[in-house]
Image (cartoon, rainbow, N blue to C red; front, side):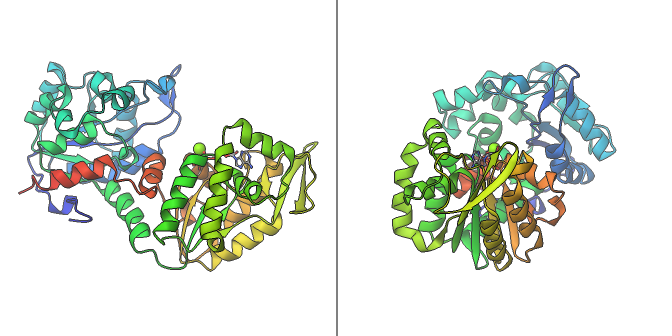
Length: 416
Ligand code: ADP
Ligand code: MG
């Protein structure tokens, strides 16, 4: 038991039918019927392999795309092929989720065999819009078609989908109401790592917050400052620009227009309030960079031309942040320092990311673009921990109890 949830160490799985929810949602190339990336499939391999090695009949449930992300709404067939290759053992697949064919295939499994069901979101109750419109309680989720049809065939439920832990849907929160439930190895690693950072970070604990998802960044900041988790917050990207504007610094009219155009105007006021309360912990850029005719330009605050659009922190800021990161014992990162996708505005992100790789402190990094930057600079192996679950990680750091964590704690009580 860790953080109120049972681990696979406590599960007796030999000869048992195990329903295991994974998050292997990947970008799809519909024309070719292939996956553009396989990192999430790789991440769940240890759990699937262990369950199979220990003699479980492994039934995998997964989603792919959604109504909102319809271009990726697709069958899980290509995932089965990739998983089979990664595992080096057969992964059966069936074009059914919980109908008679799926149930027959589950009943036919032998010990150690693995079956991946089709996209759970093909079943309407699982859809994301439903989650927001119907708001089913966990008890109600236990009465949905998916759970009523599959739970009777299974002995236990394992959730390895930390990346989807912020979702309140039957395949994630329903089975824990009726089956003994456990977290998989990936879930355990991710959840326990981030819980550790929140509950007892080794100090000094520095947060690096940049990027463009302002509402998430502000919620996180509020939580980690009010709970005393963060000793310092280094700001960059749009987050930094909003703080600088709040303090009346000149960052260029293009930068301010960008903030207003993105409907982030209200955060200028919030930044003022946060700074008034926690100013000594919030570190702001001391210089900024912009791009002129394809060339990088930089200026210290106070000398920034009035009409520019800032796309990166300056090199003095990058060096200052590097020193902070090198002397930290825990560093949490979400969001790049600038528009790192183009060469003239990548310096800040590149330098800060190099510091993350160089520091002896434990680094936790999450967020789609932050991971892209890590891969771009070839630093993935030097990070302490890269979290596959951006959305779940951010919800967790805003202080909310994740629905799947709540459900798994309930499901732990059903274990003998
Ligand atoms: P993550 O995906 O890591 O959570 P976000 O999605 O919040 O990060 O932000 C990433 C995006 O922010 C990148 O596409 C980057 O180009 C953009 N960005 C960073 N700095 C700025 C800036 N100063 N102005 C505009 N966009 C920025
Ligand atoms: Mg992003």
